[in-house]
Length: 121
Image (cartoon, rainbow, N blue to C red):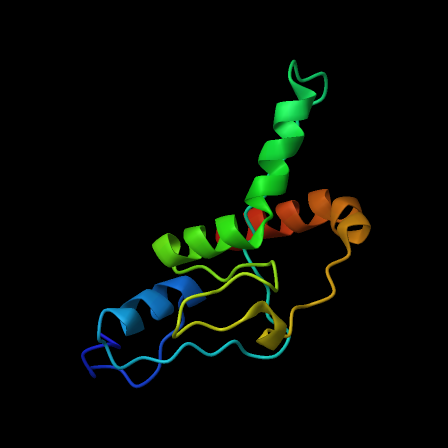
């Protein structure tokens, strides 16, 4: 409805808005200050049978070529600054990401989940 002009503003994932823009809808993705991201990841499993191939795969996935290709298909923002993102997208350097504290999040996991369950029920 945003793309057809029924709404003036909307909240969505950047890659969805970038895709709609590429499809001709008059929408512009904006990342507000102190944004969060949904970052896909790649891992090598402990005791993998083919460590050499696994390392090569990770190197490939992190390469500008692979990230440019994935971005051209999914409209997502590549995290490799050398990768080419979608034409109407926002580069990773333009997004003011929060300083995420993994240790603190881990320590607060039970508290946050308990609060979520109480609030949603």
